[in-house]
Length: 331
Image (tube, rainbow, N blue to C red):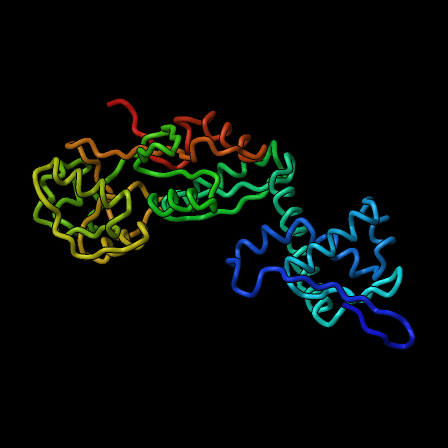
């Protein structure tokens, strides 16, 4: 349509286009996105020829793209004044949103490129709480001797949560126990960690160095909450010893459980402490064999960035040499 103002014809493009609500919100993005950068250039210059020159496309191509954009929206975005254009009120509002969206896309692109940078990219790495105080810091320190600019996003959690985070794309790989079995995962065994029966210092068994787990059948146990790998292993080992543990307390942190034991509130099956806690004694379990496997897991078929691939090779190259895992020895 056209109208006359200030002695000049002003042409405003409009078209039937899809009406409001005729497309789902997610389909609008797919429909409009190829032309949004073109519209942003036109909006900045308010001149089709200059915008076409900046974009490196023919003027006629850009004019048709803008007409199609308005037709798709069913809204006039540009007022034509001969060879120049100006934004309609709707066009100005749309241009502001388009600039914000394109800016966010640009920042996202730079972020993922930075994360994949071979020298200074990022590794999203999950690990068990028991590996936080010493094991993981030592691993990262050693890795960064050869890769000093690689960054890490670290997540301490339990196995099931870390596996779910990997499936959601939040983690690249994780150290976990027990080693999971799932068709969408690749896992590798890295080491073996001995578990001890932890008792209060004044406990009837505290003077012993070794015990059979069945000797604790009547004791109250403090354990991790259901869903944690160490809780499952505690239940399995007690079942092998012929009893179901009487659960007195459940928690989320192994060191908190150790504190409860030191306070005389029960016994626990735990990996060795990083720092000995007064008031608690760690007893070797002779039967059943009380160990847990430590492994690394990642998604099958998931492409690795260079930093992730390098860190994965680093971990696999240190099988059996994980600091602080309390690896068992023969005999």
